[in-house]
Length: 239
Image (cartoon, rainbow, N blue to C red; front, side):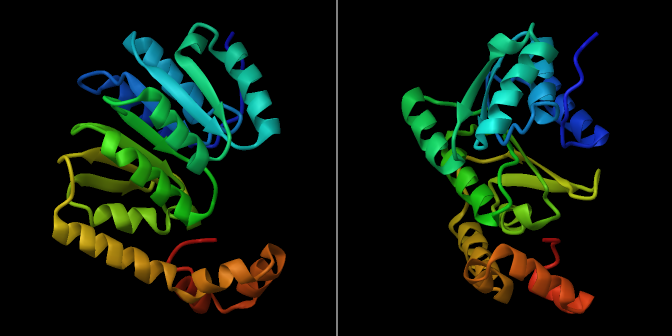
C-alpha cells in the first residue's frame, strides 16, 4: 500500500496537474516546482505523472528546513519507484532559481513549472520572470492560490501578456491558474500594459502599508475593517 502523505491541493487540482503532464505533447522532460511542502500534493502527483510518462525529471524547491527534511522522507516512502526522477533544492526561490539556471547552462528548456511558494505576491512575479525566457512555446505553467494574496499580482499580470494563454480554475477556495506559452515573447503593448497593472497593484494602500506593520497588528486591523473596505484594500483577494 502506498504511504499517505499530506498535500495542499484539492482533488480536482491534483487531477488538473496530473492530466496536464500526462497529456502534454511532447512529454515534459524538465519540470520545476516552487514549494513542495510535505510532498503529498503537487510533488507526489508530478512524480507519478512523470513515472507514468516514462520520462522527465522534477526539481523541487522548499525553503523551510524542517518541512524539507520531512518531505524527503515522505517521497522516498510514497513513490520510491519515481524518487530517481526527483532532485530537491533547499532555499528561497529568488536565490535557488538563478543558481539552478546557471548550472543548467545554455539551452535549458523548462517544459513545466508549478509555482506555490510563499504568500508574498512579489514572489510568483519574480519566479515567472526568471523562468519565462527558458520556457518554450507550448510549455506549461501552473500557480496555486491564484484567488488569494499569493496570486494577487501574478494572475492579472500574466493575463495581460499576449505570449501566454491563461485561466483560473475555481476548483477550490484558493484557485489554480493554468497557462500555456503561445509565443516566444510578449508584444511591446502587452508588456507595457502588464507592467502598468503591476505598478498599480503594488501602489494599493494595503501593499504600501504591509512592510511597515507587524504581521499580527496588520491582521488585526484588516479584520476590524468593514468587509467592503477590506475587499477594496486587498484588491479583491483574501489575505
